[in-house]
Image 1 (cartoon, helix red, strand yellow):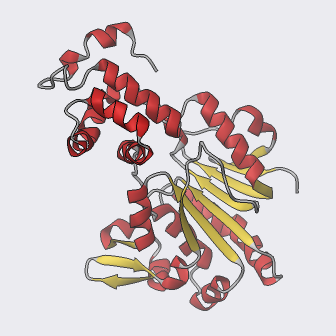
Image 2 (tube, rainbow, N blue to C red):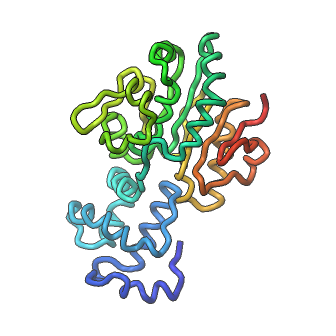
Image 3 (tube, rainbow, N blue to C red):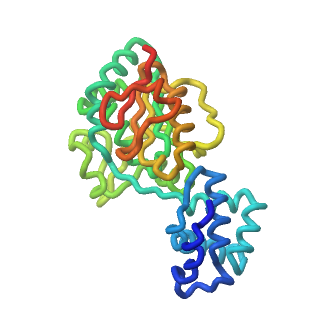
Length: 293
């Protein structure tokens, strides 16, 4: 997590107007080490200004005058450390992002899920790194489908979807299920009609869809309390913030958490490698099938 020597030497030049007595390269390295330890997130040297801008309000609110003093504080205070992690996570997402994943789910996965539900089987799915909820609600609406009567029947079956994230503010927004109507324009119109209602310039997720989702704060680097395997796991554009060993460990854990015959969906720039490659078979662009069925 160290800055390269040439970058360290120009750190002050890259921070115009910021006193080295308030924030310097040593402070940045210390924050980078903490966020890597706590959440597996890599912060390269080019993120020094981002760290300053996002943490400055917390430094001021804590009453500490310098980043150095604040870092000492968060090392001793778990709640303040949690605020730091919240501030440094990126929560960018949108409805029907990477639409081919939802199309694959609708055509290749959903029919088998419906058959199993009608035979009394329970289905579990997971949106890991769900951010503010657009991904998981895109998945739920795709599952419930364009036939509202069928969708209502599905919603009464034994199906639960976990949406987890490390950022408290993202989970709060997701749990509210309220979004700008403009942000949902990519959702197929029949799904919007069935599973949302319009309130002015906003849409609100219908209770039948909202009630299928359980929102939980979860650090992917920590313990996973879930015991039942998942039919589907979405973890997209999360691993781009991790180093290669962390990515490989995480994907291996996802593979073990899937049912044989279950599916893992990852981001467009992410790949499966390492131990998980023997368990996961590619079946589409960044779509993997858990071997074993």
